[in-house]
Length: 287
Image (cartoon, rainbow, N blue to C red):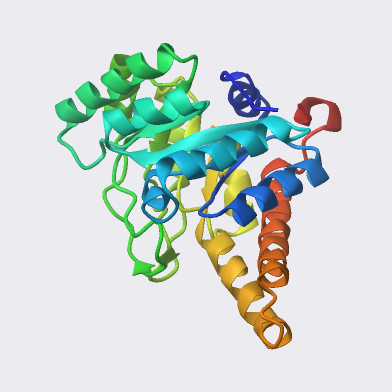
């Protein structure tokens, strides 16, 4: 079932667990995310994001994600990740997306506020919620590379940004990176605590691939209610696909190869869902 509204996000924030938000590029990855969620009996978010449209096409990837969410037996949100284009945001909202992320983090503060306010107005007309971003989460969302942490989110600015834009969730930069870190980069948990103290909306952690489970647990306890995972899914997909090649190549069995890749992703998603929701009472954690 498509997870409309902020109810699941708000419940995660209030109860101290986090929604796993998993990026997709193909039908097989979308299926893997939904199947893992059903296996776990947990809500998730499928992120059919802006960068993936270059490969799959907006209408095609959106339709796959919305259909999979509607058919799922657990709540599944469909989310537009890292969009800087209001026309693209509106197109996804019309396609049935339940939430969007407007990324004005590259802009001067006032321009980021203005862009984000426009996105909030668009989403409200469709009953969708909005994630904004303040601070710089460096790295490439689609290609793994060694990356150092960028400009961190300022708590005072975060409070102003949240109040002026009307966002439902705020993506923060607290030492997290897209892709892989250049070296050990523990999250700045003191900064995260300071942001939570002054921002009254759920927080979002991008670049969670590779973060140790204790750090994910600590982030959950400090107001992070949505955690984005991408790199580990891509790695699992390609590793399973590569491992299947000797077996499938003689018969050119594409379906079996893609099935193995889907299974690889599904396993990673199950593990992440557990890390983001364990130690939560069964009744309160389930949708």
